[in-house]
Image (cartoon, rainbow, N blue to C red; front, top):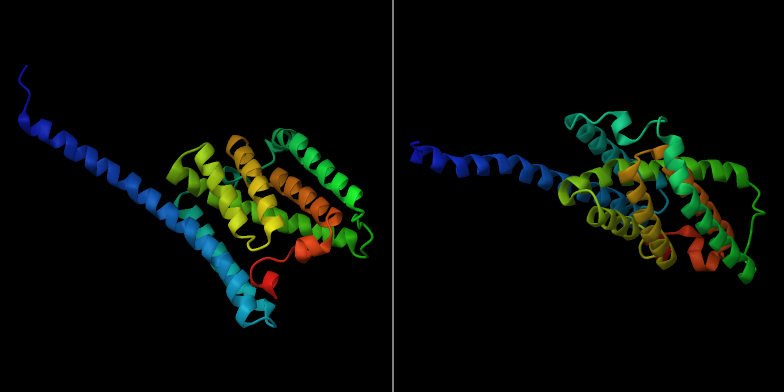
Length: 234
């Protein structure tokens, strides 16, 4: 059998060409993650620092982040079902989340009971809780439906991308030490579950329940009224 030296030389060249789209895809995904984190960072640190009386300006970075996410989903041909807006695996995801969510709620309640800091007596408790559910689900969309998916492109599915998601979520809650620690742990838990069973509705419920118990159990002076970014310093 005669092997053409031309074909031998061409093989590595084709390998290099095939590697370029993967490298470019990873670089774009990393840029997308950085852009989303930066958008929310602008809202937390810039808007509240320079326009504290104009909270409506928060709409600008949020819309920028959402526009980028939607554009990226379309370019990558990611459907709503793929992202995690679905009900076929809702029960499965909720079942996986049940134990860690329940344990977390019990721990927070127990701490509040021991410290005498339980405060379930706020006037707008139910409307606030409903708003919290919507906000938690929206956060899970950006964190899991976008950042987690892009982190898997860069780092692969598994431990590394799960840790990255948790760390980024914690960074977005700086400089509040309690929220940063809580979101680091929660972020990694939710990221791991999402990679196994992607369902944003179940994740939103888990997130909302744990956030509710955190806010109702720990004293406000410790949480600094759940403030993050520039507001925490104000």
